[in-house]
Amino acid sequence: MSNIIEIRDLSKCYHLHGGGKESYTALRDVVSSKAKKIFSFSGWRPQTHKNEVDFWALKNVSFDVQQGDRIGIIGRNGAGKSTLLKVISRIVEPTSGSIKIKGRVASLLEVGTGFHPELTGRENIFLNGAILGMKRDEIKRHFDAIVDFADIETFLDTPVKRYSSGMYVRLAFAVAAHLEPEILIVDEVLAVGDAQFQKKCLGKMEDISKSHGRTVLFVSHNMGLISQLCKKAVVLNKGSVSFTGDTVPAIEFYLDQQQQQVSYVASDENKDYVILSCEAVNESGASSTHFLLSEKVRLKFVIRKNIANPNVRFSCTIQSRTGDYLSTFIEEMGNHFNADTEEKSFMVEFPSRLLAPNNYCFRLVVFIGNGKVIDMAEMICPITIVDEGSDMSLFEGSHYGYFIPHQTFTETKR
Image (cartoon, rainbow, N blue to C red; front, side, top):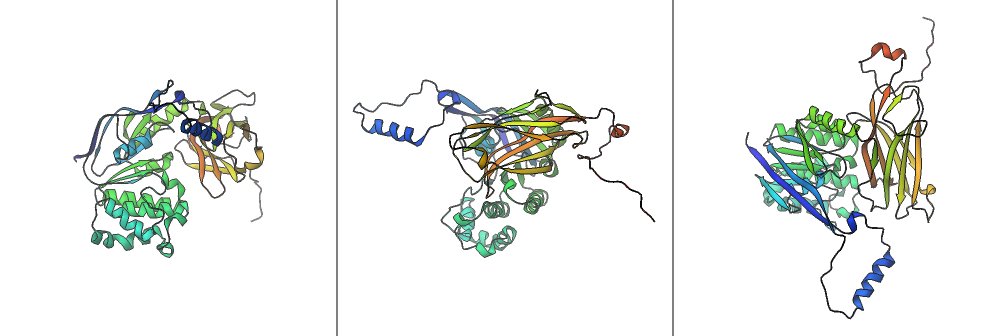
């Protein structure tokens, strides 16, 4: 097959001020700064920044994508995944390098991308089709299939600004998948939808790739979804390609990289609430990646509050080595923060003999009660539960699950 995307030495540089560590700015600081400019009697001068630094979101990225490929883009937060997809989608101009694309590109990079909030769902379908260069008759031919897939017929003539995030994603994906683009780009937004819709979308992406020979670029932190959909993968690390190849070796390479990173540190601190750091610690309080079956596992993390919200909540999910979600608990967070509190440290403790001997990692999410995600850290703090000689050691090397049930075993009458 011929290449439908060719990327050569692609780089993207952003200019950051203050060394990338700007302090939190209050509204009064902004007003004060603007007032000083208004009442300044000096002539206009170009603004200069003494502490300006260059941040390379992408650096010398090169790889090819063949027609009909389903490619997973893997990497931790800040690796450059979203920037790469924005460059491919022609939303962002690269600083250097070249990219050649053959065919139309439909991008689903975030909830509501390409939608006009004041227009109805019906009007946005035709708007997106026009943006993709389709004629009105072509859009009409796919209209019923789009509405049926998105399951929003009742709200079709409602302005999309009144849609929930889930409705937004259902319609956006339906439009992107049905209007016959040669290249479909999906960046993590399926996490907003429910499990049934995710399954439906994965089936659709697989179908348009196999049956129609279209190309799919898919970003997700869920390695289970990546391995299910994609045949090949590209691993990004700090803006550079560290691995390209088949999906399974790529996932193993990525997870081995993660295993070397004991703790998590935030890459972006300018959010209402931000998970600043996280680490797995033993009963002595020391960072660790290995825990005995008889040991408790403690997850210690720090959250900063920049803008208060009484409805903020927190969830912690145990993940398998391939990214599957195994178990989740949710905690109300609003009461933990006072009006003048900026940072607080928390700890989650898992009892001994809860996790079976295996490899695990964690997913932390800070969100508002309506489901809107404020900050998320996924596939972090990898740990290994080690069997020190229990009955399970008789089956060493076998996969016997993730959790140890606390059941009762009794003899009954026949």
